[in-house]
Amino acid sequence: MLHTPRSLRGMVTAPHHLAAQAGRDVLADGGSAVEACVAVAAALAVVYPHMTGIGGDGFWLVAEPDGRTWAVDACGGAAAAATIDLYAGRAAIPWRGPLAANTVAGAVSGWAAALAAGGAILPLGRLLRDAIHHAEAGVPVTAGGAALARAKGPELRHLPGAYAATFEPDGRPLDEGAILRQPALAATLRRLAADGLNDFYTGSLARSIAADLAALGSPVRADDLARHRALAVPPLSVPIAGARLFNLPPPTQGLASLLILAVFDRLGVTEGEGFAHVHGLVEATKQAFLIRDAHCHDPAHGTLDPQALLDDPAALDALAARIDPARALPWPQPSASGDTTWFGAVDRQGQVVSCIQSTYFEFGSGLVLPETGIVWQNRGASFRLAAGGWNPLRPGARPFHTLNPALARFDDGRVMAYGTMGGEGQPQTQAALFTRYARFAMPLQQAITAPRWLLGRTWGEESTSLKIEDRFPPALLDRLRDAGHVVEPLPAFTATMGHAGALVRHPGGLIEGATDPRGDGMVAAW
View: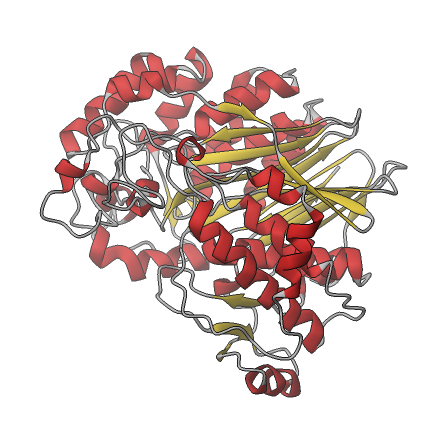
């Protein structure tokens, strides 16, 4: 993938081609970019269930053609019964199983809030049409999905619920190209289409979900679902040369994404792809992650005003001044993992959407609800079993999220939506592709196809090395090592670097899009 697709009437990019086409067809039927992204989100829940689903959380960032930029936080809180006492005798919340499924799934509430704020023209049944079809008729399993099912099957197939019946119907993981059918999830999507999205939280569907969760041993109850609300939140923003960048506030790591680019902007790097570019972004990442790991969690218990930090040039200058242009800061910090899907859409009116949705780990908690077919997230497994400090478990608390959709408004009128999956790598990949495109004039698709790096861990593996794809020149890797970076070469186009995407709308109406050759996605243009 070297060339950037272009169109005038609308465009969608998503990490699975069937989901991208579902969104594109909504645009062709007269729907808005927000409506297209609901169709994409629903389709991804079916065709990419190892990465995302309606049992997870989501975040929306929307740029309107009149200059407004708004955001939706659809993060679910911890159940009322999810207390520290529930985990007595444990050092940490388990990553899998019923006790990992301890938060409400907010994604569907995010769809409802985005549709209400962004304008809905088409019936809900039309938006969910393709997802319902793919769940009923089946969808071919991707190579990545088959590989993950093989790798994760031993830890998931013995959990309570319908994981094995759904993803190992013949007693073994489905191979690449095998047809995955999800009739229970299809029925759930039909119920949402008929009864409305709020049925997930307060209607008969909510009662079915609550009964499933209780039977499997999750602490989430009907009252927890009923109390949940998606939040309209002011997006965080920061100016850099030539643009203003936007992202989501805590509990996401959006602050870190903005800080990386704001700090890098102060380093005076003039050429891309060399040592100064890669070293500068890695070191800016370290400064941003130190702040993130102290302050990015449930804002109800935070002590930092993130927008005030972004509005303080002296504070940003001080962060940049901590970076040695020739030496790496030692990096023993632990990090966070997770899996997710980013997708975006632009319609012909100029509405631009950056959206991200996840069940956290592959297949979330591993609980597949038998009656509803929903894969429930394990986002609450990131809570600490502590009374205070960073990200402590409390009933109703919202967990720290690696999820963060990004958006930029350029001074020349362009609007860019961009993002990726990849846990710890999300803000780093955002920084790589944005600087390549916006600072060093690399075409959009090449900015995503080009080799990438990742400091820290992803895919659930403990690591603090600087992982870097081997398509970079060996001389650059040697120079990074000489500067003190612990370099770990990885194969070309490794999925460890996430599945990124981007869209740019130009002021004259031209739309450009890009998708990641590391994934199964496409750009669907109209």
